Structures are given as structure tokens and as C-alpha cells.
Image (cartoon, rainbow, N blue to C red):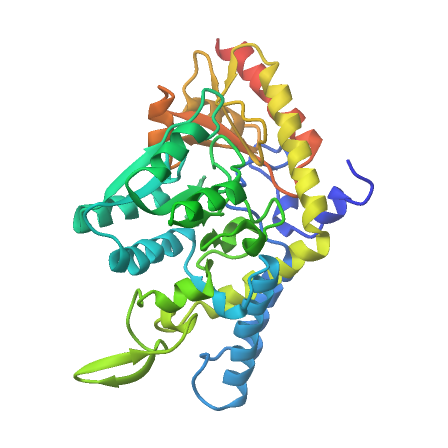
Amino acid sequence: MTAMYDVESVRAQFPILSRAHQSGQPLVYLDNAATSQKPERVIDAMTRYYREYNSNVHRGIHQLSEEATAAYEGARKAVARFINAGSWREVVFTRGTTEALNLVAYAWGRANLGPGDRVVSTVMEHHANIVPWQLLAAERGFDLVFAPLTPTGELDMDALTALVSGGRTRMLTVAHVSNVLGTVNPVAELAELAHKHGALICVDGAQAVSHQPVDVQAMGADFYAFSGHKMCGPTGIGVLYGRRAVLDATPPFMGGGDMIETVALTGSTFVSPPYKFEAGTPSIAEAVGLGEAAAFLEELGREPIQAHVELLTDYATERLSTLPGVSLVGSPRTRSGAVAFTVEGLHAHDVAHWLDMAGIAVRAGHHCAMPLHTSLNLTASSRASVALYTTVAEIDALIDRLALVQKELL
Ligand code: 7TS
């Protein structure tokens, strides 16, 4: 472990990590790709909002509303810094990655896509970056195509390039990091490819923002989506970053209060981004929690977090690959966070169940990536996913327990 990164002092900030498991074993939480745990300061920031200045934002001219608005907008600025957006106006709060990607499809896509157009995605996407585009394709009549993967679980860049350069490609929408394979995709290179062919790029950053520095400007992203709950923040809040010129030209997603400039019974006009995309009372406590989570990760240091997560991912990969009867799903050159595997003779759900009996939490199933599993001739896999507070001892516990389960059941 790097000297500058003290994992035990990081762990001490997460109350849940010291709770007991019904097995009597310490909790080994390796389901971080589903959701991360929350540090005390995030929980406290949200409690403070409810105890001290709970009020609606952008409305009444009274002290509590001004304090709530300042905290909500302060969180937006913290998030803008966190991803190096050019302006706080490029940060739209949503309920999560899923809503952010639906916003891109329904607001941008519905206004810009029609017969003859093409949207390119990939086989490794989470359902949240597949299904909204399928629903819209059925409505608007554009072509939706998916780039295949190489045998190691990386994007097949030749096939992807052929898809993006053919037809009238308007959008390339791709995961930054796969939630199953852990593959880190070359998003800056993909942005260059999309732009060269006159397309935009939408990056699903759900599995990336908590594990590595993200600079949306350096990357060249037009849209970048992520969830608060996977980066030590609360559920119910997420972000859609949109490049200012793109957001300006995109019509609203949902209509209602806060997003209008004037309303007459004959029609309405809308305010500028980000408010144009934030109809109704937003998730205020959750935004405050997300801002605190972003500050927490920045104070720990994005590079040290990345080094820790990649070290632990590599360690898990290496140890799993040496267990007889265990096969890794994919072997990408750069893997971050998630390692999926199958155990010969055991169903993924049984593996997860037997691990849980010893206090070890992993996920089993298709992980909302059915097309990926189908392409690999799998119906399910088990997945261990690490976070900034995962230890080598926790990976050792996973390996020891897996070896024991194999010995007892097979
Ligand atoms: N995109 C990716 C790459 C994801 O991993 C997830 C959630 C989403 C989108 C959707 O995020 P949400 O916050 O809107 O639900 N992934 C997982 C997972 O791997 N296990 O549980 C949720």
C-alpha cells in the first residue's frame, strides 16, 4: 500500500464498516459497483440540512430558503470542480445515471434523431445505456448498433471505428468503465473518433468517477453521466454533465416548476441550463450529500484513490485466477474496480449465498448487462467489486472462503 494512503484511517470514517454480520464474521463488503458505503461526513451533511435549514430552493425570500439554495448551488459547484466542468451551468442534477442517460435520449435524442441516423453503443453497456436508446429508436426510426468486444473483454476498436464512420452516426454512447469486466475504455480516443465523424459522445461514468480522476474537458465528452450513490454519496441524486453549447441547443426533458421563464396558456419559455433540465423540487439533501462526497474524495486525493483501487483490483484478479475451477470473465489490460468470475460446478447465486454465510457480500446474476453475458455464452456470473476502503485482507477472505466452498460442495 502506498505510504500516503492509509486505508485504515479511511475505513474509520465509514460507520457501516464496523457493524457486525449475522455470521459473526466481520463484514467484507465487495459489492461496491452496486453501491458504495457512505462516510460519516456525508451522513452528517444531510442530517444538518434537515435539522438546521430544511427549505425549498430557488423560491421564498427567507433565510432558510437562502441557506438551502446556497448549499444546493454550492454542491453543484463542488461537482463541477470534481469533474473539471467548464462551468457550473454544465452540471445538471438528476436522480442518477439512469435518469441522466434517459435525459440524453429523450431530450437530445428526440430532437436530433430520425430515419437514416445512427447511434453507436457497445455490447458491454449497462441496461441503462441500452434500453432508453431502444425505446427511442422504436419511436424515431434511427439505427441503433452495438460494437462487439475482443476475446479479452475490450472494445473491438476496428469494428467500432467502422460502425462510427459508416452511416450518419450522430451519437456514440459508451461506458467509461464496465460494471462487469472492469474494462477501462479509452474515452478520450473515442471522443476524438466520434467528433471526427460529426457525432457527439455520451459517456456513462457510473463506475469511473469514484475510482479515478475525471476531467470532462480533457476527455472531450459532450455528455457525462454518473450516480451519487456509487461515489460515497447518497441515493436519489446523480449528474448529467453536458457541454454548454450542447445543453443550450437541447430542449427540456420534463416540464414543471423551476425550469420555466414564462408560462402562458398558449405556451411557455424556458430558463438556461442547468435549470431548464431540473423541473420540480430537486433532491436537496441528496445534492448536499453529493457535494460533500465530492469534497471527501478530493481531499483523499483522486490519484491515491485510483492507485489503491487498481492495486486491489489487480490483487483480486491475480488471486482469483490462481484458484482451480475459477474462471475470470474477461482479461482486459486495464481493469478498475470490478472482477467477475464463474466457479465450475456452482451457480453464481449459490456462490454469492455461500460467501454471504461468511459475511462476504458480492453480487451474482447478469449485473444489468444481459447482452454482455449473452455474448460470452454466460447466463450469470459472480462479481467482486472493490472501493477506496477495501483491504488486501478482505480479498484474502474472499479467496479463502471460495476455496473452502469448493472443497465442501464439489
Ligand atoms: N451504468 C453503469 C455502468 C452502472 O454500473 C450502473 C449501475 C448504472 C449505469 C445505473 O446506475 P443507477 O445509479 O442509475 O442505478 N450498476 C449497478 C451494478 O453494477 N450493480 O447494481 C447497479
